[in-house]
Image (cartoon, rainbow, N blue to C red; front, side):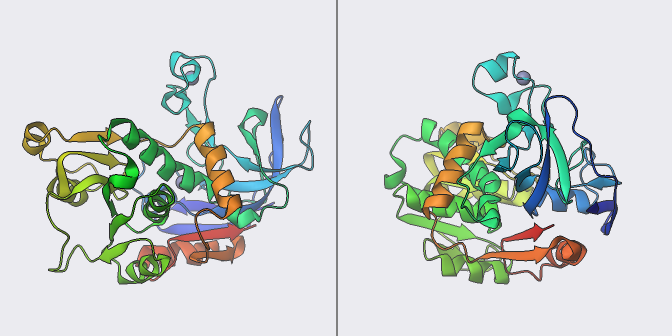
Length: 330
Ligand SMILES: [Zn+2]
Ligand SMILES: [Zn+2]
């Protein structure tokens, strides 16, 4: 089969790889669409010790099952593999499972024609749903989960919050769209990339600003800050813009540099929330919202052939892509 293989830092190669063979309880899936995630880019930059080349990356995937009880069914892959029986799995927080594995991390990912995955990681989807739209379920579920956790600790309904989103990649864009869908009317989004800012402006759901310019949002004014970048600078910005009593929902994993103002967090009772991935419930909710068109026209998503994947990675790296998401078609 053909696959896009991460072979070294800043190197991707489209080449022949052995077609995987499903083991007991596993499905062979012929892939239709696979999105490029920020975490794939992190690996491509050589910054992810967990993703060692040569490796097939990719985990935002949709395809057709080739064997077993769901044969010929189109499915969304839940890329997070969990043990199913530990305390976290049984307590409904399987994303915290200590034995969790993600496809495209140590196991082969989905930038390929085929993948094998446990049958219990297959999520049903409307069979007439567009595969590129369905592949957005994973990033949308990540944003949904981040908002859901914040809702547990916000002291007012989301519809009455002022919200700030840091980062205009797909997680940030989905966060803004989902906040609007939940009734939030005051949403602001910051990104340093002018192409991404112009894409975010076209969404029509948020005001957009350049964090490097002079014209910044008002400090100490947002009930909710969603950090979809996760750098020392965005953590510092979160602590500056969040209101007393507000919530910082931290999703991005760009670096581990200092930036948190723990004095302000303490004195102003600010809640700092870490978020990791999603539950199967979040994924199903994301599939439903995308299928119903609840997140508006998804015309900001760009589609390319998997064979063109290496140039897509290079262009995202160079910052010359306006689309917050590129989906590859095997
Ligand atoms: Zn992802
Ligand atoms: Zn577990």
